[in-house]
Image (cartoon, rainbow, N blue to C red; front, side, top):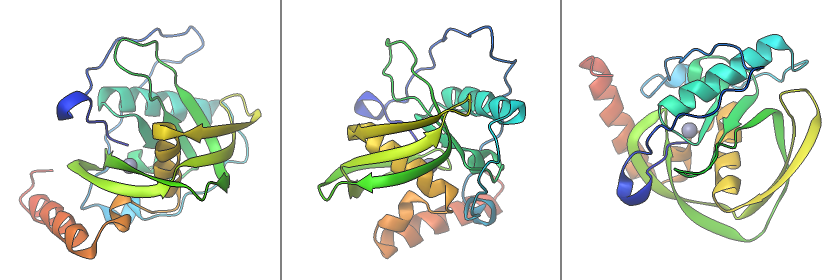
Length: 196
Ligand SMILES: [Zn+2]
């Protein structure tokens, strides 16, 4: 998910402590509209959270911090596996990366909330989206341990946005057809001109 930060300014990239067990990371190119062929794919569950999965997690995190963003799904770097990374910590706070493999929403509240969403695959476009205000998500962490998170606020929105990516769903699918057609056309035109 994209991040506007205060008054729409992009979030500065802070240096963050690199733990010894992290392998050297690679910033990967993020796939954006109009490349819907890749973004609309349904991602495959991981059989195990192995070294390759951890390496992908690390590269995704580095790519997300560089963008900068607060959430990224593997398909956004062209890998159709059910892996997402999230860090909603604010500028000046210690980084709190969250690594989720095979995440699944096991409960969603009836109460809903609005949040102005953005997406690293749809740069510079933000729109209000209404979703369940609270969710419970089951997942495997970077060590393959089964975990459950009960989230509200930005974290609930971010989890739902990223899990949608694993099912080929984009946040523009929730906005009016008129607005969606307009943004898709804008990216198609820019793509033809070679600006993306
Ligand atoms: Zn997104």
